Each structure stands twice: as C-alpha cells, then as structure tokens.
Image (cartoon, rainbow, N blue to C red):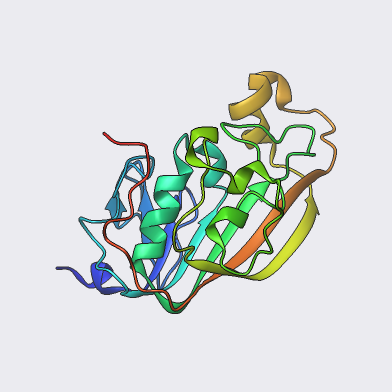
Length: 198
C-alpha cells in the first residue's frame, strides 16, 4: 500500500483541485489524483479505505453530479470514525442554474441524520412503499450549515449549462449550500443496504 492510501483524510471528486495531505479521488487520472474510482457506484471506496479509518471527508461540488449520491453517503458513513466530519458543498435548488443531476436543499440530508425532529406527515419518514430514504440507524448529525452566495467560473457554466456561449457573459451570483455533517457514535451496520445495486 503506498503512502497516499494511508491518509486519514479524503478529498472525493477532487478534479482539478487535489489537496496536499488528503487521499485525492476522482473518476479520471490527473496530476495529484491518488486513486481513480467511479464514486457513483455502490461500495465504491471498499478497494482503498477500511471501515472507521477516516477523520475527514471533503465532497466539494461532487454530489450534484451523482445519480446515486445516497450510495456514496453510505460509504462515507462506513469509512468515517465516530466524530469524523464530512464537508459537502452543493448548489442550492433556488439557484437559477442549480440543477445538475439532483436538486439539493437544506433538508436533503435530514433522513441521514440522528438529530432531526421528524414531522408526523413528512413523506421522507413514511413507510417504504412511499419510497422512504429513512435509515434504521442514521449515521450523522449536523455540525454546521451555511448558505453561500458566489459567482461561478465561466468554464463551469460552459461545460454544464450553455456551452461555449457562456464565455464573456456577465454571470450573476449563484447560491450554494455548505454542510458539515459529523459521524455519530452508532456502529456501522454492514447489513445496511439501499435499493440501488449493480
């Protein structure tokens, strides 16, 4: 096992921004990428990361590109030690260009948290026949949440929204959500499975 694989901090979907001191993971080979993995597949981190071995995970501008981000959240719950922190940054659904693959809002991750007060008639907590995402043992608590306003990079808008027409446009402010979720003390349940399989 090389030195990078012994890191206790993960930078998932690092793209053009690998970080020193982190195990940098992306879907494509590039300078600074330590492991090439498809993060949109079930159990994607099993080949490189042991259970409860990681202190910090960054997923910056990643989840909005995944069709099955719930699977990755399960994997992150598996690899984080109790007290470990997951940092997520996603576009807010109220942003005028927020939609990539999925919408996100302030409550998107509530079914994965143990510190959420459940509303009696909230379909997120309903029986499985209604497509509930509820875990029998939620693995996270909310540490912090910030609503951010920022200006997008023209290359990002060009790639995902307008094509070459984006360059030179006076792009307006965007709105993003920045979450820090802390792994709680619940032990990892290896039998926890989602409905999505290979």
